Length: 370
Image (cartoon, rainbow, N blue to C red):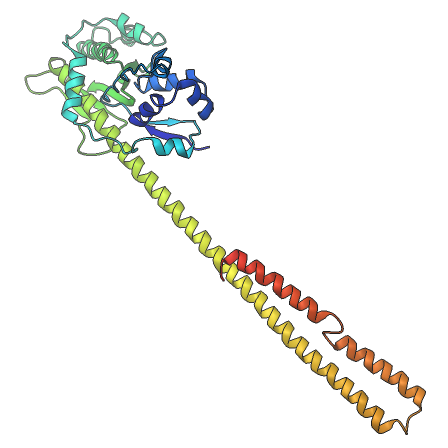
């Protein structure tokens, strides 16, 4: 069963219009699973006792739907079976157009005051317990005293704590300390923190979101300004890039879904036309067979009548010349042959009419012609 895709607004409308237990029985999943889906999408659910109060006539205002954050998905794929009545009651499924500047403002507010932390590998170990200490990795490679590697570790530490602060995740690569996996909202970014070729200039680049040349995916030391000095703004820009990448991917996904739907509709029309053509060809073949059978019966009826006429002529003209017993034997044989050929006496004409009536009624039922 293909996933049902709802927007956050549709999911919000659903859980605030139907009691959770009733919705659970309708969609075939537990109320705990529904609540978990809502929590992951930051969609509030009615508190305990909300529907009991509503039954008693006490109307409580629904909790407002929080605005979507940078990098967060607005569409949620559900493994639920929604009835057509429920789906038709939901608001339009178009993704809302949101003001990017307002989203950035909310993100900055959530980020708060940014301070460049001291290089503290413990922070990284707590963020990802399975990741070895980057400082130890550097030392094991003889790079523990490299000023550039200390800068990289400091930036890594800052990105880890900052990402955690805004509700994201940051994981360093156990094999390559220059690579990070950062998740902002629901958008995963593969980030490189490395030095420019033949220099000690530091750069940060997003590697896995090459969706548009108009989206900024790289930041580096500038003349008189290091990345550390403007890392807060760089992080905000990374979040904006994650959002723009998400929007670009979503737009392509929606366009692809529309294209697949159109292709499916065209294929369905082609199948219907092919089925209609086959039906027409089958009807034409059956009609041709009926016509040929009719002509054959007409010829047979003419031959049977001719034989009977010939028998009468023989009886009138040769009765005095042929032994009466012999003549009767011949007349019986000739009459039997005429009866065999005759479509009416043999029953073929009746069968032909019944067969034609049956196929005509079937063709009427299948084609809808009157």
